[in-house]
Amino acid sequence: MAFAASSPGGAAVSELPHVIRFANVEQTFGRDDGAAVTALDDVTFDIGRHEFLAVLGPSGCGKSTLLRLIAGLIFPTRGIVSIYDLAVTEPRDEIGIVFQRPTLLPWFDVLGNVTFPLRHKYGRVSAADKARARDLLALVGLSDFASKRIDELSGGMQQRVAIARALLLDPDILLMDEPFSALDALTRDEMGFELLRIWSERPKTVLFITHSIPEAILLADRIIVMTPRPGRVREVIDVNLQRPRSIATLSEPTFNALANHIRGQLFTRISA
Amino acid sequence: MPSQIISAASSSPASAPEAPSRAAAAATPAAWRIWADRLAPACSFIVLICVWEAACRLFAIPSFLLPAPSAIVVAGFNVSVSQWLSNIGATLRVALMGYVAAIVVSIPLAVALVSSRFLSRTLYPMIVIVQSTPIVAVAPIIVVTLGASDLPRVVITFLITFFPIVVSTVTGLMATPEELIELSRSLRAGRVREMLHIRLPFAVPFIFSALKISTTLAVIGAVVAEFVAAEHGLGFFIMFSTSFFKIPQAFAGLAVLVALSLVLFRLCSLAQRWFVPWSLPKSER
Image (cartoon, rainbow over all chains, first blue to last red; front, side):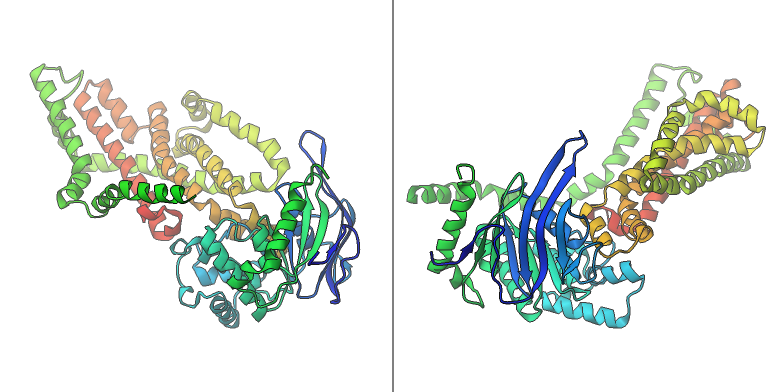
């Protein structure tokens, strides 16, 4: 094979020190009818410093549960989720989240939305904070839109604002839950390259959840392929594609080989 | 494959010429169309009045059954301005006091219901029972209990007005996107800020639709209270007029009542447009 593939639960080799670690994590949810649903089962993996990790899998494989565990919004039934070797017991400051929908606040303008985390957490926004928010708007390509209303922006622009909002507190870790899946195909491709540019200017440890195989390969250093019900790590794949990546990356033979391999992994899971 | 592409390409121009022309017509309608659209409500109202007037004259309908619009206007002008003002003032005072009381109680109550499962389990059934009780039937009892002042009338107005505000506010507070609640929790901003910065603003469009409905309910409440016990007010005026068979005068009172409701409703809409324009759909700003 042209790429390294490690088995689930096995040590995913990374020369960088790990930032996030999942150790034998199991997550069960109680349903209203009393039955328990296992969302994650024996999930073990690491994310290295400033690594771009994509989590790929069909719906119902617990991808979003992974994200909420790191964010400290929920806690594992068994096993340990740790950040910098400290178990996650509450939401932490070094995390920024971008959701599938932009979920901006219509009563604030664009700048007000970017500064909202500070206003919400501390109750005030200083002039320096506003200057920083303007820098972030420039970073996501919306310098001229600071005082625009939210409904004047397209879906892609709104998601850029959401990314700027997630970067406001300068988090080490960026959690992205299918951030481009609500966008049209062209905007989606553009946003992928934009994200890579932003990531190269502001290196972060990124956990990027997606159900798009090409998107995962194009963006990530490593891909975790998950199987549904219960969510398990099927395979961890290193993406050995040159950075910076561009449209030309899409036509590289390695890209297609990887895509075909992942497709095989996802579609043979029932017989396997 | 090529045939598919060709068929797709050839099918789209076939439908294309129609669509742009229709869009252009919608974007820049003829001037007469704009005026027709604006004047349509007034025209239909004038036509209705004319038909009413004509029917009353043609069929010689006695004024105690259905007075002609002209007779209503004449009856209205026969009542002195000071009498109108005192009656309007009395009804308006009761309606507004009940309305404000309903707002002051309902919104914090809705916040409490959303914040605490215990409170929603204990209070919600009671609120539904109050709403299920026909207030018109309870009104005489309230008047007996609370005596002859504005108080029983304000209480009756309050009871009719508060329920829609509670229900809409609760719906609005619950309609906040889950992601924003998670964002708030991930920032550890606390429940109070979550309510003030996210949930309440998100509920504003819901609250305003309830406030608009409640303006008319407040007028209804005040009139119901005046029917039961009052010595002034528009409800009392209508009762008084009918008991003396002054039917045109009763109709005049009714017309003023409708106008009062419309003005309050309009003021509420304007308040929304002035203070929270973002809560309106783009077309209504």
